[in-house]
Amino acid sequence: MTLILKLDPLRPEREKIERAAEFIRAGEVVAFPTETVYGLGANALSPSSVRKIFAVKRRPLDNPLIIHVARAEQVEALVEEIPPAADRLIQSFWPGPLTLILRKLPSVPEEATAGLETLAVRMPDHRVALELIEVSSTPIAAPSANLSGRPSSTRAEHVIEDFYSRIACIIDSGQCRIGVESTVAMVRGDKIVILRPGGISREEMERATGKPVEYHRLVIEAGGEEKPVSPGMKYRHYAPRAELWLVPGEKLVQVVKEALERSGRVGVIARREKDIPGALLYKAGTGIEEYSSNLFSALRSLDSKRMEIIVAEAVEEVGMGMAAMNRLKKAATRIIG
Ligand code: TXA
Ligand code: MG
Image (tube, rainbow, N blue to C red; front, side, top):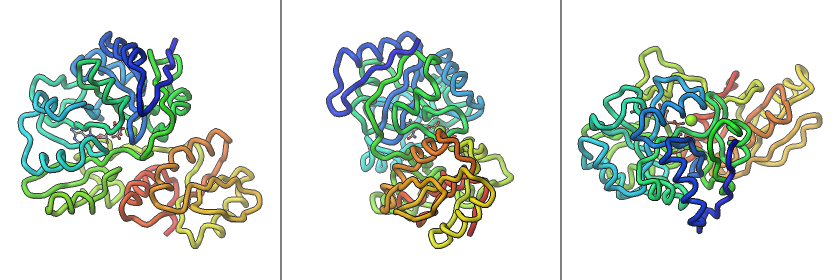
């Protein structure tokens, strides 16, 4: 049985938060909304609770989770130190879609960090998430609430599709505002390195810190040979069941026609209206932010309509476009330049 709790995203009902928090305290898994995507949460300080997340998500055990906190002081109980540049980022962007990689204290169970000496931590910008963490009286470890490899969940229906009857509780607070996951960043001396582009852009981080912010090499080159710094980098991710072709806007119509010669079930994710007879169009939005925030929904929706090929329109790799293109490249079976 899974309890589904509908909660007001802006003014969460206290009794319902209490019920969800009871599950967390009892060591169960609770799916909850954040401003980025839904998370699959459990008590971060309980090894057996964290193991449940890996089992239900079918996540490889070497891919660590993000620990969510409700107050910046909670981080002090988890990490060795907060370097000045990290503190600057916390001041500028928390609560918000920025995850920091810091050296962990031995008291944090290795289950959550997959045995690494570092941990990932963030404070989500969502009332429901913050109150759940606060009332549970523990930091909450949570990956995105999707079965491993599938597109992330930006609505409770997506979570229900993947996890109904497999976890104790699903909180439904509607659609997530940002729709792509947090930026994962590591502070190295004077440099800030982005391991996963996300809801906070490189440009915003440079402006706030006055320091250079770089993308990790593996963010730029798809599929490096070395052991990835961020274990999540090596897996195929965010993928619909359909083939996914990524194409620049000017070639979209031509490539969709090519796809239609191969299959009668072609879906298209485009920024604006297109007249392509025979294909199913999902208009994700003209603006890059709007497009990014609808992307996972688009992939899941076309999948549920059993498309065989999905052709997605590429966006410019600036701001949130960097995050959207990172997800699309990881999910793509074919990239057309
Ligand atoms: O927006 C988000 O970040 C969402 C919401 C629920 O907070 N969570 C999320 O979690 O996207 P997940 O598990 O799907 O992605 C976490 C990423 C993975 O790529 C993982 O490898 C990386 O963070 N990561 C976690 N701990 C790390 C560490 N110690 N060092 C480097 N990368 C780490
Ligand atoms: Mg994920």
